[in-house]
Length: 86
Image 1 (cartoon, rainbow, N blue to C red):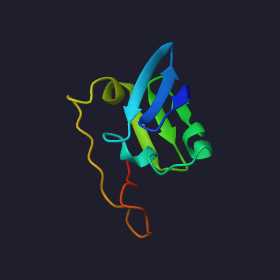
Image 2: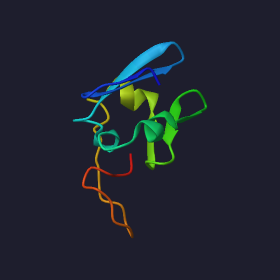
Image 3: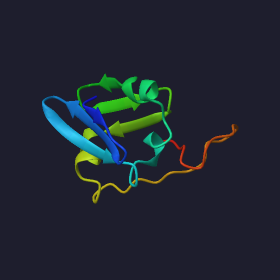
């Protein structure tokens, strides 16, 4: 993790920095700092935030226009409106 701001988070992976703004990546808006920092990197191109139940690949983070994100409410449990599976 590089930085958290009121507008989004910056993630540093493999020497490249990605900005995930809260408008396009709403799952991080209500998250705690600890939840955001708890990120796993898989195969050097896939990130997972287990506490938030969010999975993103680097291609999606780099070019959001090619891969529109869709959020949906979680099944079977109460969750804030912005919480969704990525």
